Length: 255
Image (cartoon, one colour):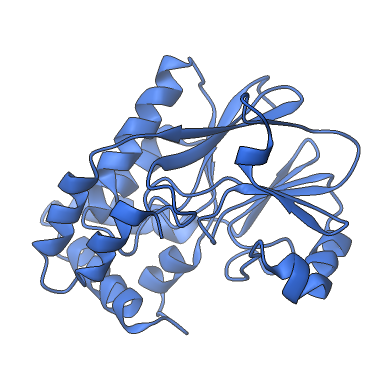
């Protein structure tokens, strides 16, 4: 494992946000990047986002939206389902046969989980890696779900996305958001089991519209937030009739 690496998740076809995050990773001279899935869905530029993630990441997990576009959307709301079918049409209508085949091949190769050096990478949760949500409120409303996930972990540290809400679950259970970590926005990895949500690059939902990702140092996880051109992405969403305007409006509020 690299002494320092980055983890991104939930890009959701938001090219403006993805480029800002990847530029920041490059400025930090971080060579290894992992992606926890949901490269596509919701947003306006799925093809370009797939290309960038394929080029820049070492391993990419399969998210529920990636799975929905490659197979079929299941248990999606109307706007998510419409976006999935629109995304599929964009990829299918690519005129360059090589690009079209490469993108579908990449989507089909995504793995539900990846384990290395005591770290587990998933999109959703340790026990249901593609589609189970671990919400911060679960520590109060469904602590059994949280504890069950810790029981399923053989590793000390799991990184996930899916809820678009960054923070750290410990097995009390307790959830610690990044703003409780002090000015450094860093969490020290110790000898206890933790599940760390890295947040969302392209569609944050913690009331902070800035892109989110994490940098993993040797024994610390740094939560990073970055401004990007929300208006540019929102405008591109509104220009597509098959993408709901709600998907643009929510970007401004981070929800």
